[in-house]
Image (cartoon, rainbow over all chains, first blue to last red; front, side, top):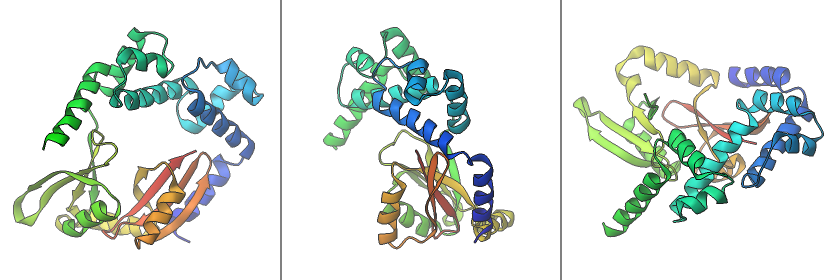
Length: 134
Length: 131
């Protein structure tokens, strides 16, 4: 066994000893993955897993390094890129991935990707056009 | 400031380009000659071509401490670099069929699934799937 494997096993035993907690946070993450387009809130997420809201929030942050809300936003932005590449309009995309206001979607999109949704879409579309031309 | 590039030390650039493109499936985004037969070769993921570039850096051949560090990591089985995948098991099956050697088979650790393979250029690489 390499030094790396020994270390991994040692650390695993210390920080991942509570299997039930891990299954809980994996369940919450997978719930977000499958329902990101809906109006999710922490109460709903914790009720679904039968744990208190703040306990769930702490556990999620501990295991994934970001809060469920931050994870949800990242998920929605990632999904919105797919929709924009597929040619969906910016407004439709915004609501399809679960955002409630076009303004907050555009601002978040720009912060997360460095481009506005329409800039991103134009760039992607002109790129695929370029590929087909050359 | 933006993070757009990560470097990976390789002992043979030619061989590294072949392994990283033909076996792992990365594509060459930039390739330009430098002095002494060295190249600036930067790769990207086919499914994320705007993403960070991976620079195949011939450091171990030109700077001894780089080689010492790389060899020590290899000897200890430590992966310095990791790539995210959607499914570690599927990548493991695909890559083993292509002859890639894994020092750690797909394993679970907390909210992660991971595996470690030898990139044939002096490095252990970890594949990671977030569960």
